[in-house]
Amino acid sequence: MAWMAWTWPTAIFFGVIAMLLLTFTVLAIKFPETPRTGVLRIETTRGDRLFITLLGSAFINLAWLGLVGDNQPYALGVCLVYALAVFRWV
Image (cartoon, rainbow, N blue to C red; front, side, top):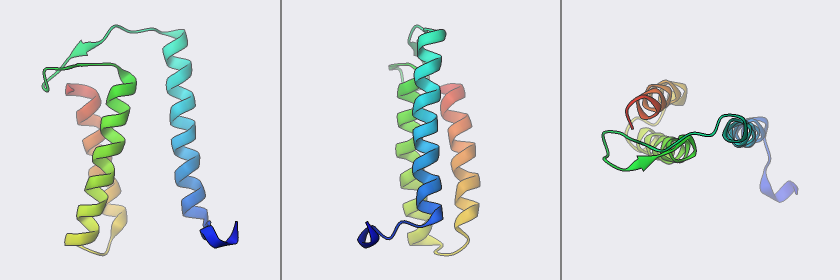
């Protein structure tokens, strides 16, 4: 698998995604929830909000790379604020 250029940041990224999926699966089993309607006027569950957060974070990071270029850790801060907003209001 050397051709894939696995680095520690890549492994951490996929590890965090796997942990999030596992955590949300356990939460769904232990604490089932009913969908709620937020500012988007669509019914969403925790899993839906996680997906929206991951997708939006990918776009935030791509835009950051294209517009700013450096200081990618600051994009992580923007993504965290975005994630908090999605889980609070969507």
